[in-house]
Length: 131
Image 1 (tube, helix red, strand yellow):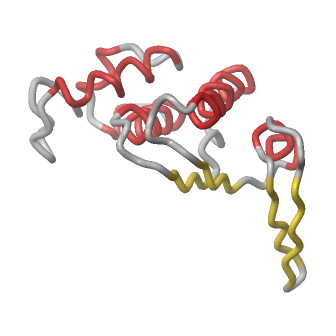
Image 2 (image 1 turned 90 degrees about the vertical axis):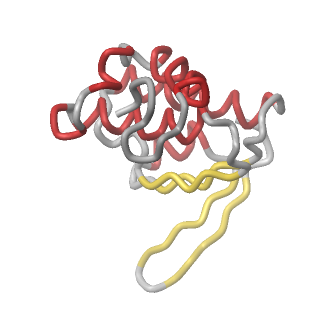
Image 3 (image 1 turned 30 degrees about the horizontal axis):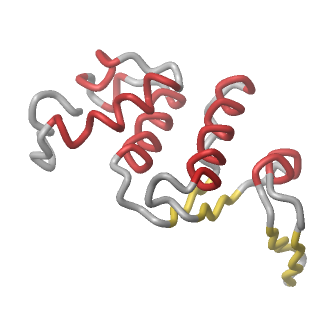
């Protein structure tokens, strides 16, 4: 996927090194980046795709639709904590996450503002404490 030159986008590897480092911190070894997507597990491809989005450090807001759905609980927690640090640390470009989840527990771990959509209606809730 991201060898010396990315075959699909011709992004030089130096531009992807941040993404590779993020993925390593989430348990993805560097050799997996040279595999075809079809040869990766659901969790591996999910972590790599998210690591690319985060590691390029260009997005201010990420829209994440079930970003940890294919991950085990421990890895999911690692990813959640990393993303929260990126937003709250203020060191990079990332300012906010729009996190779509069906898990109320996950929402409570990562969220500060909630929109609940059910039965044709929308309900908003704000949490005052920073997660």
